Amino acid sequence: MKPTISIHDIKLLDKPKYKKFPIVPSAKVFYGDRPYKVSLNILKEDDNLIGDSQRYHWWAWQDLLKLACAGQSIFFRTQGRFPNMYMFFYEREGVDLLIKNYPDRINYISGPIHQEHLEKISGNKNILVRKNLFYNQYLTKVDCFVPWHGYGSYQKRQSIVSEVREYIQDNLGSGRMSTCRWKASFFVNQDELSDILPFLKLQWPQLQIDYTEIYYPDSL
Image 1 (cartoon, helix red, strand yellow):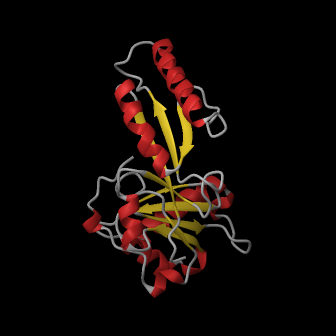
Image 2 (cartoon, one colour; image 1 turned 120 degrees about the vertical axis):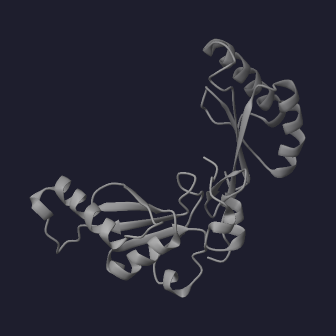
């Protein structure tokens, strides 16, 4: 999902108060419009369950957090696995309120850490934040598939994918292809992508082509 929020409305996690906690550079703007994610521990070893029930404890903590993060334009969405609760914020002020009210329960904070990183997660390419390239060699993963609607039966779409897979194998080899059969997924460097992409678009205009690029903020 591409961001639906303006890059100018997103603030960076670049102040000293955020760096006191583990920072995980985000790979996207969550849900399209929530740039920030916080992992919160809602049941430590010396805590007692509220109501002696994990389920009740979970909902009770949601009520507490709604009060702690009250604000006219601050919204959060919780999810995750007990006892960790993951919260997604529209505004950085939501993160600030968690730091103020529950600093000892924060596992990590995720979001944009500097301007280049923000531009990456707001761009047209999907990014994957990691230190190593794919197979320690390739910067980009390419996924080619035929959209479900408007292009005939499953067999017809699968036939197109098979043709694309065969072309990739003939030109790049099979060693860098995913085993997934419903799409043609392969790994390339930038020069190879520039060479092969125009032909793919010309020969199979019905293809949807998605790109995932390795990105590791070098400030970390």
